[in-house]
Structures are given as C-alpha cells and as structure tokens.
Image (tube, rainbow, N blue to C red):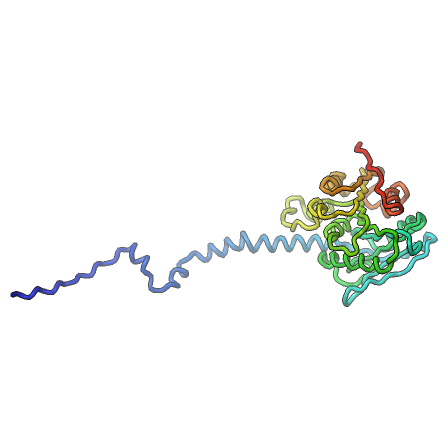
Length: 314
C-alpha cells in the first residue's frame, strides 16, 4: 500500500487588519496614542480652570479682605468703660474690645466687615451699652492688631474661636446674640451650625448673598469671571441650616449690596425671622453714623429676645 504523502503547509500572510490586532509589544499601543492632543485637552479643560479658580479666589482674598489700622477711638471716647480682649489662636492672638453692663445683661458679639477694625465699632458699642446691652467685637486674623494671616479659611476659624471666647467671658448673660455686618455675614452663616454654645439669636446687617456676588459688587472681579470662583459663603443656601431666630437689617439705599441680596437670604431662612428695612443709610453708615433708628431693631432683639415686626415692602 502506498504511504500517504505529507501535506505541505503553506503559511497564510496576515492582512493589515489582522496585523494591527496582534501586537507583540503592549506599549506600542500607548506609543501610538495622540499624547500631544490629550495633554493639550487636559491643559485646557482641567489644569487651566483649576488654576484660574485658585487665582480668582486669591484675588478676592487680596482685594476683598482689607485691614485697617486700629484708631484711637474706644468706647471710653463716648464715656463707656471697656476692656481689651486677647483671643488665643495658636501662635498668634486676636485683638478685641468688650463692654460689660452687668453679669446678666444680654451680650451682642459683633463679626465686622472688611476695611474695618475694632475702633470703627467704638460708638456702636457705646450706643448698645447705654441701652443696657454688653458687646464684644474682635479683629480677624491679619486685621487691625490681630496676628496671623488674612485668609478666608483662617477667618472662618476665627469666627468659631471668638464666639467660644465670648461665651466664656459672659457665662451668665441673659442671652447671646451673634451680629454679623457685611463681610462677616457670610462667614457667620456658614459657621453657625457648629457654634457652641448655640446663639439665642442671629442678626445679619448689610449682608450679601454669596461670595461670588459680593466680589462683583466690590469690583474685585468682573461679572463674567464670577463662575471661576468657588461658590463659597452662599448664605442663600447655608441659611437653611440655621434654626435660631433671625433678624435681618438692610438699608434700601445701600449702594454696595442691593436689597435683593438679603431678601433672597430671608426668603430661604427658617422661621422665626424678621426683616427690618431702613432708609437713607449707605453701606458703611451702620458704624460711621450709628443711631437708634438703624440699630433699634437689633437692640430690641437683644434686650427682650423678641423679634421686631418686619418692615412692609415699599
């Protein structure tokens, strides 16, 4: 019987499509990727927006957190006794001023605005003292004679630390009211849920809706650049976590923060709440020319613990 012949195997050449699939070097795929285009895309859509946001935020800090020297005015300038306060903040101290009517008198703790120092509030402290209300005001880190760095994250910690210090210095006060003016309002509303002991009342005066809108109002950044900022100190959103009675005071003639800003906060706030509108006062007049008309609602709130009636819209 004849032996079968061996079949000759003829290699089949690979098509170009098959050759692309069978890659011996796995790194070859990575080498062929369009890395230049990928890096450019990352730069445009990831790195640059993050850098721009950080730059915009730092610009707001530099141009929005403005210190002023402490002047010669004290409550004693207006015939009211006072004490100096030093609030420990790690390696530095916060400078403050307090007036004390009595151990049981209500106390208002003031979180002031930008481009101010404790001396700017000496006449307000005197006004409150003569109405039977103790006060406590301090300069944030990097403001006035306070040490430390003028940074937003640091100021947020200052708020909590100063509130605790005031509670220690006024342990028997009938009530403690946290009063925030302008810049201070955003920081206070953000930190309020964590303040201990809990305030018996909150007063927001000449307040703003968010850091973005405040930066535009201050002229720190143009309107088109506002979305670059993180949406920090958004009191319209943050006020929902606040349960303490809320009093808002705002001038209808405030040239910096329009009435619509605090109205949005007020609408979002929980009850009980009241909104007092005053007229004929500019943004800084609360401390530049304080009187019982501007501060009457806050003084009533502090003295008796009851909110004044809201002012009807004109």
